[in-house]
Image (tube, rainbow, N blue to C red; front, side, top):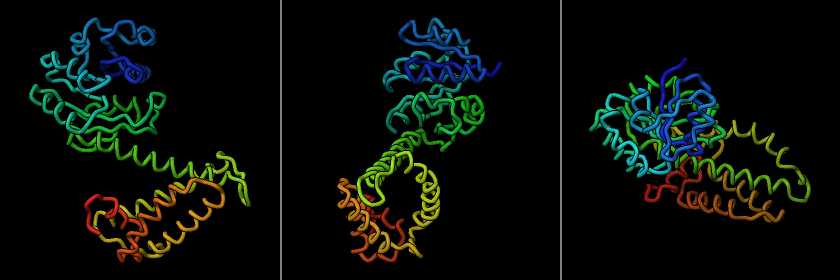
Length: 294
């Protein structure tokens, strides 16, 4: 059998977490404030504790996933003494200040605390390709990394408990931006006209290869942003802007909403007008920042 782990909270996500631990061979104890949700997990080998205190006492690793941070404190607040010397992993969604407040509470009580973010829906839990983000003491993460790997690919971001929440927001922004760009492409290439009528599936087969190039651009531009220098090389902003004009024109011809290309042209046009036409696309970060230098 694997290591001992306790899961507090058996909502849709919490139950999935417990199921993943059980499937990976870990001795999983579960508890939920509302009784009657552990039957399916017990059939798979999990053990239901009659109280939260007994659930916490059963394992050195305690994972909590409930509806909100208020619920986290309601559950673990009275259990501080029982959690002392254990590792508490909080996978409840919340804000950076809430994460820091909870980490401070844990530190005062001698509890190793890992703040986490689940970068997947319940159906993705257990898939090693899905990210699980953690912050807190590196020693606690390393100690339990193999157990947490039952949920996905665990990544330690640093010691600041606010990091998973901020990463979560930033990565979701990237998700929505990418999906919106993909949807615009689906609409553009699927519309009637020369070269049109392409299905979303056919288009996406090509997109999957293109995303490797997109990743290469990000890897090139990231050091430029860190250094604050943006050499344009063979793909300066002036060239980006001219190609955005083509995208806007194609959208107009095919009856696709122009909002996305207009947004791209407005942002890039401001940078070119400010004298940065020879810079790379990474220069736009200064225009995305609300009060950044231009």
